[in-house]
Length: 219
Image (cartoon, rainbow, N blue to C red):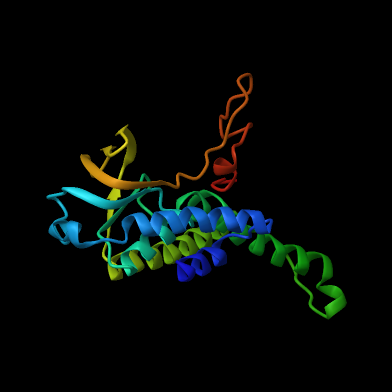
């Protein structure tokens, strides 16, 4: 459990000692409730013939994929459900990572255009190529997503692509590419976030942009 917390601590900046303690208590209880693996051995490797799975994580962002990988490292049969084709959740796909990637590109442009001369660097006809910025951004996201996918395979995390719906406390219906119904003994909800629009000002991704739309502009 201490190793799990250290892994999570890398992903999250806890704002107080209280936050860290709350997370410790949650994962301490989760670990001890699922640490008896013998009764689950009959489902190891039987993906497609699911019985009761020790743990299912809904969402493959920084919280979800870390929990799934760590559970796999502890020897559990574990599954992770993610609606997007690329793993990484909101953060990697339409949040932190694409934002920082585009900010880095725009920072280079700003530095060269406003401070190049004082460093003896003259840039004639300097202009931004938005499509090239977006192309680079997608390349970064694909590389990171493939890295998570590799860790899933290495730690035998079964991945389902689709939208998850809780039928009851132990049953999950999956709609999408991997449409099925599975049962789980423990479920972690790590579903990330979605932009919220104002009722009187809906997103059209042309004039009124969501954060997701702003990261995929073509002009």
